[in-house]
View 1 (cartoon, rainbow over the protein chains, first blue to last red):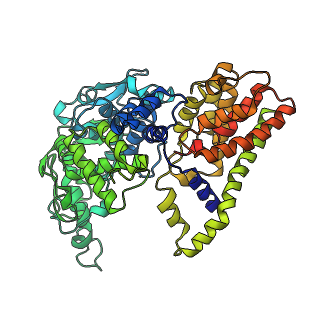
View 2: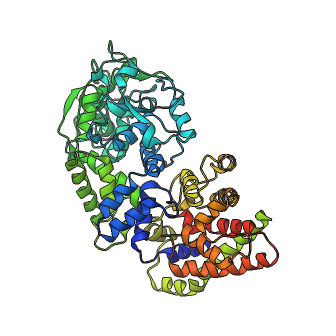
View 3: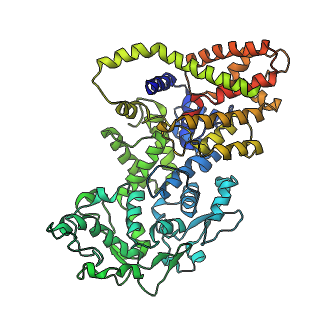
Length: 383
Length: 199
């Protein structure tokens, strides 16, 4: 009964929106905060909305400090939520800061997994590849992310060639979540979750070629179930093992990402007796099997390459990357996943627009905020 | 005195809100009885949690600062924020609107309002006619509710809150409560309310 009362109370709060109400809601959804009373931004947004110019209104909100310091920051942090718990309690780090920086500076987001660029702050203590203190300290002291983020090069701070830098894939935060111990398959799993908005379970398909499945994957995991490898294991490993070669030289040694060009990391040859005929990783080449089976609609264009940088390009030029980014922005603004046919069509339109706008993340936010019916409550909205 | 006011007003306010809900409850239940049976989670998913969120801990801090004009770096605010941060929501999901979250909001609102009402200029940002003598309670409450709840509730809801709230504060005024404390009460009662916390 308490819940029912609460729901009814919330229902009583819904009402016909004035232009100021829409401005406040749009601002709140973009910034995850309530604007100041008598806010000049809200007054300007209100004027645009009265003129039917919702896009300009959204642009005002994305210029606010609150957008960078809360709304966009939390959006960026969600990419580092490896457990997909939806929490934003993790600290700011080089990965989330880079997403904010790319958005602020209108950098082509299709290079987010391949560029030799990351963002740090112009604050002390100085950036270090060995810890996250720089970012945590800046966040705890409320550094203004709109003004204090500065671009830097990944290759220079890690002391490797620019060709080995792969945007977020070579940030310390991604490395800590993906290259520590294990087999580096976690990197593919994280890519799938964060940049394709899919779990490995959702994309598993045993019709894909298993030619890249490595020796540590049991060829006969259970003698009582014939063909288990072919019908089940290869569904995930075919895809994962095809891609993980890209990270053959990367490792995370508890504090720092390590790149060793001289050899494939030992983790690629563990438990080799499990499947003696399995694939032996000899370099950082990778193959992209996304165009097969259940992920055919991902429409990847780059199907093989060497190293993390080219894999990053393959990921971000896939159609599913644009769809996933649009879906994430939609969820942030509308607080729900798209579920109806019209919502899903809307996401596809947003994804096309994102691509046509040179993968500009800020414009994606502005476009979604100005057209999403969840903000304007308008029947004439894009849905 | 401030905290006594706060507690009284909080309960009063919540009960006012609930009372207006209860008036519609019988009708709502009758209507629900006519519809195909759905589970409560289904109803929440379809109607509410899908389109409404609550402010996360960072959002609460910044929003209360925006509304009151008290900087987020204010020392006393920081002490309370660090104390309740873990109580506040870590995501925007409405199902996290728990008693501990509400307790956290309440403490934050109390500290922001306490700091705000130390400054007459900050009070005047909300209520320009603020004076320490012969304070007009209804106008004071009207200013806080309308500014803090702007874009968040319909006028009927706001008018109802203002009316009920003013009656209570008039009583406090009659008892000799200082203007700054009355402003504090008006501030915390409207700042810790549901319309501010959801977005």
